Structure formats: C-alpha cells, structure tokens
Image (cartoon, rainbow, N blue to C red; front, side):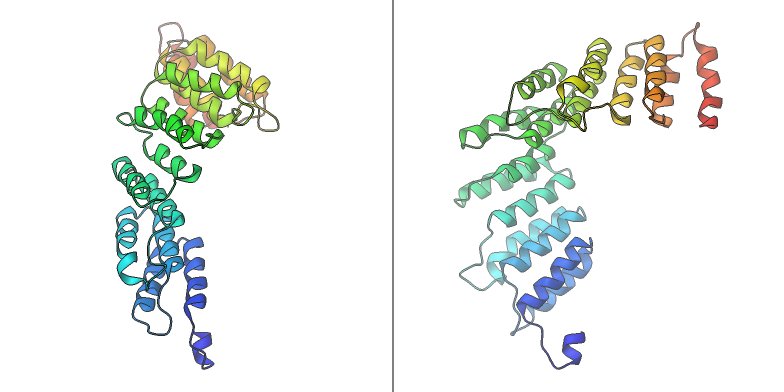
Length: 296
C-alpha cells in the first residue's frame, strides 16, 4: 500500500516478495488474498513463483486441500511458458500432505511428478516417507529407501530417520533395528539422537525393554558429538519400555540417572515410572512420586 500511495503500482516481483513474507510468517489467508489480487491484475499476474509460495504457505499451516487445489490451478492461471509445476511446486505440495497426514495423496503426487518427467529428490522422498509414517503405510516408507537408490539418490540421515519413524509407528522393532544398524555402518548417513530415540521408541512399543536400555547406553558411543547424549525424549521412550515390560526397578534407576545428567523429569516421565511401579511391592513408591513431582 505504501508503494501505491506514492503512485507506484507493485509488479509481480513486489507481490511475490509480499507472498514470501506471508509464507514465512505462517499467514496462509493473507497469502491467498494476495494471490487472488494477482490473478485479477493485468499488470502483476502470478507466475510459478507466486503459486509455489502460496502452496508453501498452505503447507506451513497444514492446509493440504488448498495446497493441492493451487497445484492443479497453476497451469490454467499462470501465463505460459512457465505455467507447469516444477520440483519446488511438488516439494511444497508434498510437505502439505505430510503435515496434513495424507499418505495416499502424497503417493499420488509422487507418481504424478514422475509422470510429468520430474525426478524426485531427497526433499520429496523425505516428505512422502514422513507422510507414510503410519501403522498402515510403514512398508511403503521403508521400501522408498530402495526406490531412491534405484534413482541414483543415496538416502541421508533424514530419510533413514523417516523410515525409522514409520517402522516405530507400525510396531516393527526388528525393521527399526536393521535400519539403525545400516546407519551405524554408513559414512554418509550416520545415526543421530533422533535415530536412537526412534529405535528406542520402537522397542518400547514392542515391549523390548532390554534392547531399549541397551540402545540408550550405546547412544553416547555411536552418535557423533555434540548431540550424542540422551535427552528427555530418549528417557521418555526408555521409561515407557520399562513400564510396558513391567520393570519398576529399572524405571526407578533410569529416573535417577536422568536427574544425575541434569535433565528435569516431566509428567510423561512420572507417568511411565508410576505405572511401572503399579505392583504390590512398589505401590508406596508410586504414591510418593506425586509429591516428588510437586517438589519439582
């Protein structure tokens, strides 16, 4: 508006800059209003950058339906020749599907991208694999590692972590441990704290408390510093494994170890320990923890 007040009519570049500001600020409604203004303007029509940015704004706000609608409208509303979606368009739309929890839409988009002669990159695989981190879709997420390799793309740590998360949500601890071993042997995709936390959570989900505690102990040795020490998420997953495995003494030891490492337990940690201590022998400890939590 300042430019217009000075008699300067904003062009496509100026409106794209405003769109980018809305996207980074998480303002999808403002971005869509600007895009509509551009569509009605003879002097500042939208281009592919405009649509890509509006799709990204919708993605940031989890509005996957609007993102997909914009992707479909781009070819009709952007003047040729640059009026077809590119790799950035699909990356933003896939991210919207990921955030909106739409694995089937993400898989359809990936196939459409290929059918239009565009080669998916790691960023596209990351989004699809994370979208497929569900109990029903975990095999697809895991198989995508090989799909990427078949296309000459070597999966990185982020991609392998996405596959790990899919295995965890699918309750596939054996698959998760195989992936973690692969990462430990890989110079290009070494495990990080997220890798170990996810593998511990997979073991917890399957009641494999011994393996979960072993992984917690190995993390500091096998993850490159500086982020190689267990954090609150690591302890939360390990405590959950002790709870599910009926190991109150191990849970109590873990809680003390957590404190000794300068980490403050939260409610999720107390929940797990108290449930682990729901036994005839340990009920007084569970009851006393209510006061411990209040004291912290």
